[in-house]
Image (tube, rainbow, N blue to C red; front, side, top):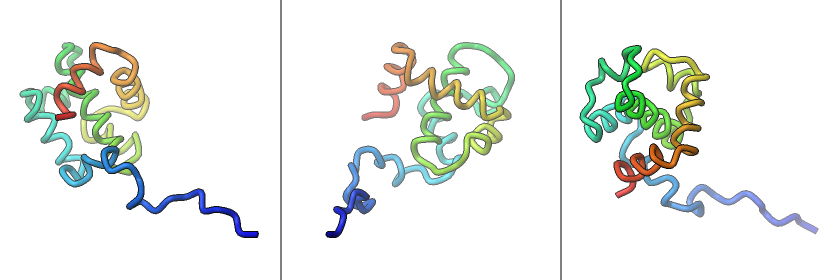
Length: 110
């Protein structure tokens, strides 16, 4: 007896979950998209500031980069001078904090 194929071909996967792949392929593209959507300069996103709007923009970059690429947390954080733990925390904040999640959905799911 042959076991049923439990792994689906990538073409059969939910297209919506991969929607961002056709728009942003590199981390720089994702960062540029976040900059254009939020209006926050690249230098500020890379800085050590803790201003809420800038931190949220950083979190949005982390979330999009994790969703749209196969890069490691370390490489995602390296572009904005952060470590893997900060990236993981930012992704969790977007997922868990309703206010941040609503703003993310408002900017990136149209």
